[in-house]
View 1: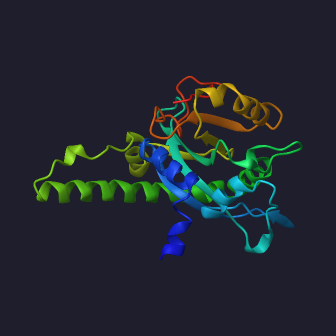
View 2: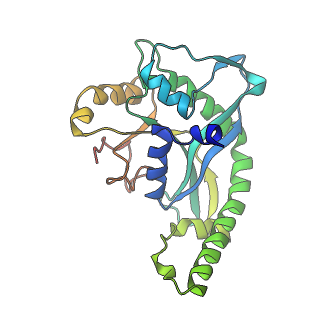
Length: 243
């Protein structure tokens, strides 16, 4: 049990948990998708391995045959984009600012990782759009059950955090669900000095040269409620916010 839990208590995993708790529009975490076909891919270190990679960035990722590979994205969230009868399902990969996969003198590992995710999401968009309303219905039922139990035990049900109304609207069919095949990269775990220093060059490179959608959100537990939400009226990705 300790070995199994170790993968979930690394620095990135605990940081992602804090971000998820601050974002009521999150509907799923640790989403496993069968990867789009490719010959051989570099396996992304996860959990405790990812933390170890921060200490030994020179280590080479091990290769995994495509037929055994699964893509695993950190977070799925819902957002609206101005159409009252639509909601968008968006997937996110979250990385500590210190993660060596964000940096390279040639092409950072995260660029290939996002490309794999993009291919998988494009191939499976129809299935995801058809399946996630059922997940939203389960979340609505679980919330109702949680509130009923608290009320039955004399506890304040209103003290529970409320989910984004989009979840119930997708669950009821009031909004048609669409899938955004372009993953977002959420970078966290930095302060204002780091944001304005070397990190800005890293995120600018990922946005400009490599065309990634990068949200730099600062420290988990700060003003990070927009970590998994498209900002209202935003055309481009937001400026890094060292919360």
